[in-house]
Image (tube, rainbow, N blue to C red):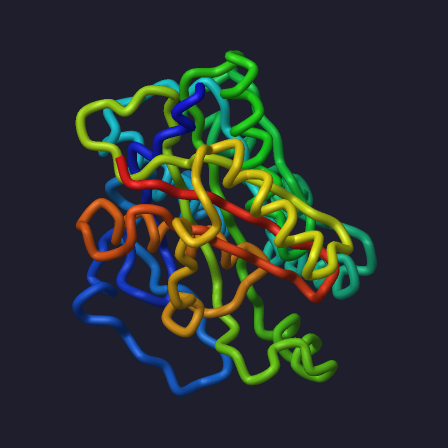
Length: 299
């Protein structure tokens, strides 16, 4: 574990073309404040009958999970860990609207069952027939990093050798308008996120990148953040100037509570293709209260 954790495969469904890396050469540019994700063809992943009972976020989670499993050759991960800021928001809204409109009578149970935040991770596990460690993290703008940190610690402790780590969020129109009224978006593109990673403790044949360290800080001022970075650098036998923070890809993929999953995905894709520095530091400072640091290195 001294060498870190390896990203064997990654896949996304977003406002860019799904389940591919077309955004590198042919990015889709948006001039709107709000854009939902471009859906993939789910017929290759899901039975049509089962698909009709699932919300979009669940379909995206299954599709990205199965894509990284196929790419990595790992069919039975030893952990499924999901970070989500809002969970199954669209399904929750459907249930609440039906509750009001039907006067609390004649309600369909499916929307209620699928409305909890941990529905995403559990649906992935059921679909894959995976009975291993399963957890969901809901922590606003560092939800994905919280899931990633859990996986990283599990690897460090030697409890797992592979893990599906994912970031998922959807944005429904009503919630977009509510957040827009309070100035949450600040002119940024509001979008949706579905990113899955297959992580392993061994490099395998063609790893995308290596996760060297993951750090979460609460209410950290600038000096404390720099101190944490320097401590990690010392532990890794490097210095601060060795680590480059690349331009954000959020203008391409949009803003969600799990946008940092896009940052790690894009960095890993570019690192594998030699389009970026060998040592990358991804910094996420959410609303001045939560800070995450992800240290990535080329394999």
